[in-house]
Length: 441
Image (cartoon, rainbow, N blue to C red; front, side):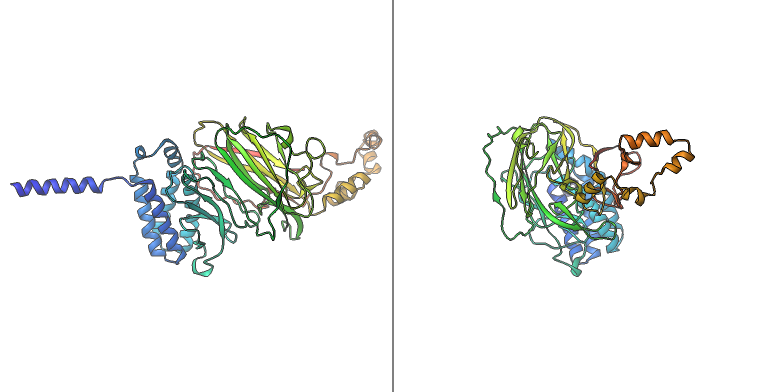
């Protein structure tokens, strides 16, 4: 009888132990196992590790998480389950890597709200134009495995809460971007890019008064440099921020203190105007009005309290730099805003003609762009259509025939792409907030 009781007790204890929920850290451990398997081109181990991540995600008790972790986990749980399930169900490594990219995006949202004990590195692959997480600083590419094991760079480092910096290194390829949306910063954050310049820009001293910090201190480093783009089959000069066009999305929460280091790596002056932002006058970024340009190879630091929320953008106010890529987006979340699905859409028009040449042609009032668009008007056509008086009036006020759209553009871009990537993890019935910015000329 005693043996039976002992056996029942043992079974009950074993059952309770097996039913214990997984921890948040266990999810990251499972994820790293998938990543390491893909690095080794090991589809079987990736499948097994993904199955474990699937089960651990389903069994995780959200009550063991803090408020920020709960919010982040609930916002990405379905995406983790969906992509882990797809990785586990097949041994096709290409299919696994496709879902690993989406899984990495979900885990990136989660890690930014997690209570960390060790640094987490967010790495970027310029060939795949995709990110992944790593617990090691050494680059081991899961998208190409043994074919290109060291392709990529550390784009961001998330430090534990008791650390004081979150560094961003390496070089992004054109159009590389990753949405770090929907995450309240638990760790002190610094977004930095090292574009391997031969010499670090020297600080540019200002006499402006200091801004008293409020809330979380969110630090960004923006590196402005010349680049070459090819949107239409022709390589032309452009200006990129942190190696991408448009520049990275700067994300804040109302009440934060923004610290933005603008590094001019070019051989010409530049500036950044923070469009729509309530900001101390000395940081507004309009040279000649309330500021002066950032000289070549100099750094200017902008500090301001975030006193609003909404969707904004930043762009150059120097020469015609805005027209060749020097733009970016700003997202400011409300305090205590619940997690939602959201996407930032930046619209740009693009011409391969140098902006200065466009300005010259417009000033000369030539018909060059009308000829390109096949929209030239003549007096003969106006008379034939009984619009002679309108044509005379138009000429009298010196208004070109296509004054509303008087430039022929070679391409129209969405987030820096002619053909945007439409892949996403949304499903029918999801609500998505679109933050649309018209950065066109």
